[in-house]
Amino acid sequence: MSGSTPNTPMDFWYNLPYESRQKVYNWMLNLILSIGLVIVLFPIYWMLATSFIPPTELFSVPNPLVPTNPTLESYIAVLDTDVLLWYRNTVIFAGGVVTLTTVAATLGGYGLARLDIPYKKTFARVILFGYMFPPILLSIPMFIFWRQIGIINSLPGVILAQTATTLPFSLWLMWQFFQTVPYSYEESSRVIGCSRFQAFYEIALPLAKPGMIAVAIFSFAIAWGAYTIPSILLTNSSNWVLTLGLYSFTQAESVLWGQIMAASTMLVLPTFAFVYYLQKYILRGFQATRI
Amino acid sequence: MSIRESIASGKLHGYRRGLFESLSKRWVFVALTVVPALAVFVFVNLFPMMWAFAAAFFEVGAFQPTWQWTGLENFRIVLNDSRFWDSLRRSIIFAVGSVVLQVIAGTALALLLNRSFSFKRAVRAIALLPYIVPTAVLSFVALWMGNARYGIINQLLTQAGLIQEFVAWYGSLNLAMPSVIVTSSWKFTIFVTIIVLARLQSIPPSIYEAATISGASKIDRFVDITLPNLKGVLFIVVLLRGVWMFNKYDIIYILTNGGPVNRTTIASIYAYRTAFSDFNLGRAAAVSTLLFILLIGAALVYFHYFEPSQEVRVE
Image 1 (spheres, rainbow over the protein chains, first blue to last red):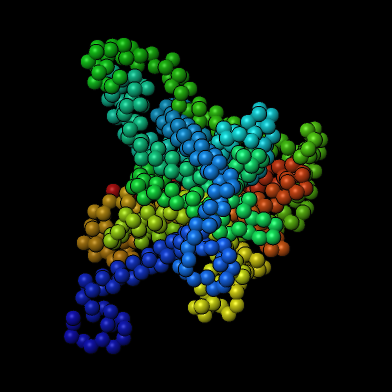
Image 2: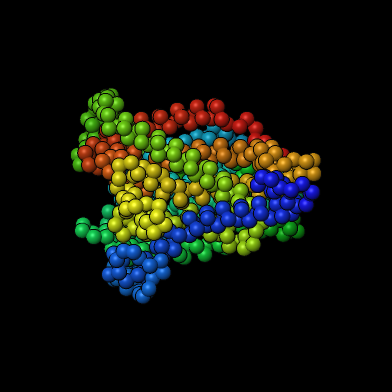
């Protein structure tokens, strides 16, 4: 430490050795990050906690932060409803949207990046303009068309409809992604005798894996939580996805908070494992897109 | 068949001939790659939009199949409806408020996560969680936490002495809109974080090292290296988030359904009501056409003034 005695806090600060200052600085940033994590985690925790609080104790204020006598009552009550059917529908629905989006976006993105198609740059930009139309209004004409061709109230129909909200960004993302995959690899494979398709399938596709996973996760996040379009297109409760089912726990006079939180927990928790294992792909996928 | 096999089995010539005949093959390939995506896009995005543009000029009831030509009547009624203009103003407040909050918080979170600290993998995974929490779940949890009589937020804030009596976060006239903005940002901030964090990781650390050696301070490094690298992502993130928040429907529908006293009735809620409460599909189509034109206009202005001509890549 230098000789002068610190008078103001700033003097004191700058008299500290570099390492200590760095340490303090880092701790401050860690503190801010922890506050952020608390903000992220608390609603999730409270959903979990509420699902274990006995429904009769929910309305005794103040609630303890940790449930005092946890019970599975809400879960048992939820399982009495159609929740497992809705869960199955959600899984099929999300699986369908992810598959359709990823396949169409990967093929389309490759085509846009590699083939000489007139106006393709304009087209790739115009695609994002597909988002400028409010989805809730997109679902009205869909309702009418879908009814005419007989895919209303069916999972394939709603999968196709939901793709409207995932495909534009995914296609654009894959288009960007394939631009970062060096074309020279495919060219050299063509020179030694690969067909165009082989070059795509065996060279470009494996290199595009992070992008495909990013697209899959993006469309999964949208499909798993989709509400607007299914609420218009699925009128029959046996075809509902779980997000629509949540609404059935709100009744005219009371809201069954315990059951809502139990069903929500069932919907949310399994997906958290994905994020943990796939986070490096999430980042790598969006990274190479250079957006 | 792998490359090596095809070379080994002497099929080389066949494929090379195929290469020379690429014109015919090219169209097959176009059909295989671009056409499926294009077909889905046309079917689920373009067709419904075209339908709405057309329906805007007709009187379309929800129950009768015949369309009655009315010309610009729908637009005239909507443009003279003060509720439309109010809802539009609220949409803009909601979109701008959310985007500002999300971009600032999301970028800050990404910068915080891009450092080295212990339990990095777990901490990052936790920070990314909100993005896959379904909007409906978030809305119900928020309603429960912000409940005016039993909500945990009210309990905690009272215990901490920050508020004297319980607050109806989603039910009071002045707090409803800010509450809705904060609630939706809890989830959608993470979209910004993911994309910004991905970009931050692709900035080579050697640049920062070189800058440090040349005597650049932390702030210098942030302004001269980090920010220029983020320009491109922030441009597209602001555009996408702005459009998505402007057209957001589900979260507000569950949280407040436009209330209290229409304080959160944004344009998408107004359009929904026109279609499903007034059963006037033609007028709802006119509303969405107007919103679409407005967004396209805003996007074009945005592209014109803010699109980075060439993304700065310091490598």
